[in-house]
Length: 131
Image 1 (tube, rainbow, N blue to C red):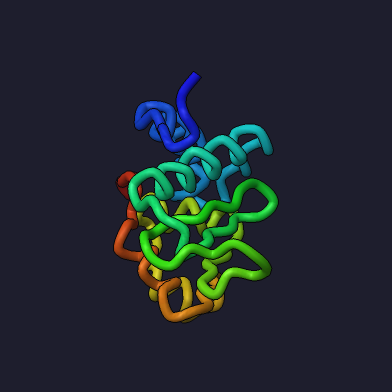
Image 2 (cartoon, rainbow, N blue to C red):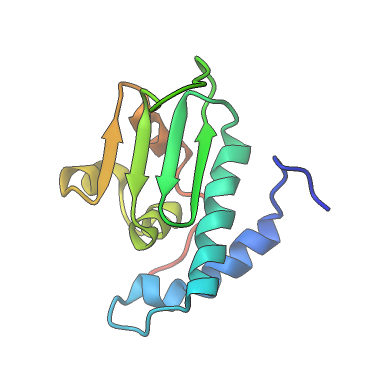
């Protein structure tokens, strides 16, 4: 079994590619909960593996929340730096189909705290070409 900080890039790619038609075309059938959860969890965990640390919390309810990016460690209560979004928006960010700043501007992403926007430095996690 892989360690907590270990992410298999092939598993991330496979999970995200399983939902890529829906990401490129919102009118395509929505993936099942299992496929969507796998894509979100693996891609968020890949972010945490690429940017280890505890200064920013990334939340994609209802599937996953991780702490990432080096800096001051947060241990209790609501973290001072939080990025939160829905599963589809996260996957659009993770695949480079949506820009982080643009997502914040339209309210699709909540980025609170002075370090939250640092997540953008680590995106995209993998590229999915537009058709």
